[in-house]
Image 1 (tube, rainbow, N blue to C red):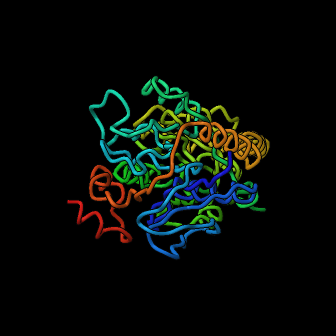
Image 2 (image 1 turned 135 degrees about the horizontal axis):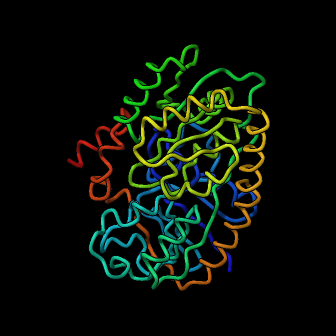
Amino acid sequence: MSGRVIYAGFEYQQPMGGIRKLSEHVSMLAAAGVEAYRWSPTPGFRYTWFHDDAPTVAGLELDLAADDLLVLPEIVVLPDHDPAPGGRKVVFSQTPHMHFLNCPDIGHYPGWSLDPMIWTVSKAGVELLSRMMPYLPPPRLVPNPIDAELFRPAARRVPSIAWMPRKRPMESTLLKQILQNDPRSAGVELRPMRGLGHEEVARVMSDTSVFIALNAPEGEGFGLPVAEAMASGCLVTGYPADGGDELFASPSAWGVPNLRTIELADRALELLTLPDTERVRAAGRQWVTERYNAEVTLAALLEAVQAARAQPGSAVRATHPSAWTLEWIKPLIPQWVTEGNKAVAQAAR
């Protein structure tokens, strides 16, 4: 079965790994000969914080042919708001813990004309979504690819500890205070990374000694920065947060129980003096790049597209989920209020 694969995208310019991975899917499928597009309401919209070469279509509404496939992010799932009634759909659940954020009391999929297929990005996500929705076909695992050419070790490594405060800003403040007041941090550069573009994150990680994963308190679908840090040759410690459990099987990663901030700081400082560190860094890079790369992702993605196309669907007019932004964004306001989208968040209040 032929037809287009169309991913509904967000028009937010702050760096978010899930947005970038959605666009990467489109580019990978297009390069493999699949007619794939990212769908944005605004004509000509492009992301500015990473290299954005994905083919696009635009408009608040879009006519889908009977053999088209619409891919939607999980956070836009709303009761009785089917974006394409009668159309063939996939929900790409990169954060399974947020899949029913706006649908707390449902027995079946929330009022859609046809059940969607589900894709996700980790083994833990497959298990969670299978238990949440046993009435749907088993979720498909589409592993995240890591760009090992961009995320690679620098020639020289700086004594340093890096982390991303965005998902745990209060704990990030505590962590920084603990680290900078510990005598073991003398001469160590502390690197809280805020609002950096994709290439800039890669540059910082390339010569960072230790990366701390402050994954989301409600759980991670995968924990992309952990994999990118390992590919960069960082030693990693932090909170696996469910979806990231599989990454902490790497020889260069050490998990810490949730909210053990002191233990987290101690482990990061201990890793600065880990024996045989270059061998461990190289082993971690090899481990992650062998398992999470473009070839593995594309093979899984093509199989997932083929399975989704075998589901029923008809020609329909679809509405971009941005039409309901003020409804699905409310639970996300604390995380998503940035200079780039304050107006949307204010309107949602």
